[in-house]
Amino acid sequence: MSHRKGFLAVLNLTVLVAALGYFVDIFDLLLFPIVRQQSLLAIGVPPPGLLDTGALLLNVQMTGMLLGGILWGVMGDKRGRLSVLFGSIALYSAANFANAFVATVPQYAACRFVAGFGLAGELGAAITLVSEVLSRETRAYGTTLVAAVGVSGAVVAGLVGSWMSWKVAYLVGGALGFVLLLLRIGVAESGMFAQMKTGGVARGSLWMLVNDRDRLFRYLACIAIGMPSWFVVGILVTFSPEFARTLGVVGTVKAGTAVAFCYAGLVAGDVSSGVLSQALRSRRGAVAAFLALSALVVLAYLFGLRGRSPAFLYGLCAALGYTIGYWAVFMTIAAEQFGTNLRATVTITVPNFVRGGLVPMALLFAALKGPLGLVGSALAVGALAIGIALLALRGLSETHGRDLDFLER
Image (cartoon, rainbow, N blue to C red; front, side, top):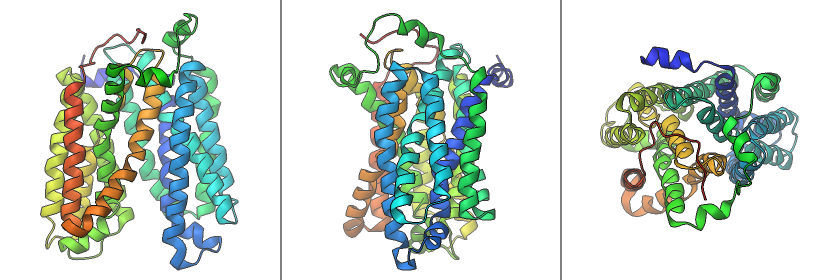
């Protein structure tokens, strides 16, 4: 099957709704960082307090995502993939709609917590559902389309945040989700879940993830292989203005522009990694290739910017985004590693723990910055993240073409 025919073969309503759901997910996830300053100034936060208040609200949102990831994951295996997919979309859409009317920081924090809680469930439920309704031959094409369409939501969020007021931007985010809910009628539940639901097997058990050494390793390994992506986005790209000054870039670098270029690269990377995994007939091979490429581009970023222009740095941010564009394959691996009775629990919690993994990486980066400097600290944290990811990947079994109709006992 050609790659063009492969992508055409998975164009059905389930994949479309999953992809659009992730599009709205990413749109809403990145909307707050984009309108942070404008919105906080509007509700009376003084300029000196923008950074601390913004960090507080981001932490509140992240806390919501971590807690939501656990609850939605368990519900995905107990109540069904569709209930989580549309329940999460409804919750974060309502929260973002309400966010347009906040007048105080506590109100803003409440909306960010609820939005984070809702955002935690959509992607994992979408990947689980798509993985189970498509054939083993076309599964990777479906998850690749979901990721590529979804990540493009970052670009649209940047445009909306730049062209519209913060209130209108939040209203647009909420409205997009509510419109998407209208498509629920035509989407069917996973047949594997429906069959498993009548089998009397334990479903959505967090205890089952830790009471068996092999399952625990598979779970932690899935988290580990996603960590380099958030090292790149959360440290190298987010702090690109600071790296630019330290590394001698000639000109002013804007973090928002760097993030936009990074996510543009991510879209291309997601498509490429999905195609590569099909061509190699190996999920592990595709991720290993992208991790190796990521290591090379990180080195170019840390040691090749002196005397360069901001445009050159933005180009490297796009290249970095491309190299971490194995997100679709990474999520597919998580779904394929576990049986139907734990698949949603794993696939929903894993990306949220990966996002939460940015916190210890950022703390380590800050701790090492004193003795090693900005570049040395980034090099150490990046080497650790990529090295652990490669070791974890080596310990996982290949899942390309695996029949997903099995249970964890």
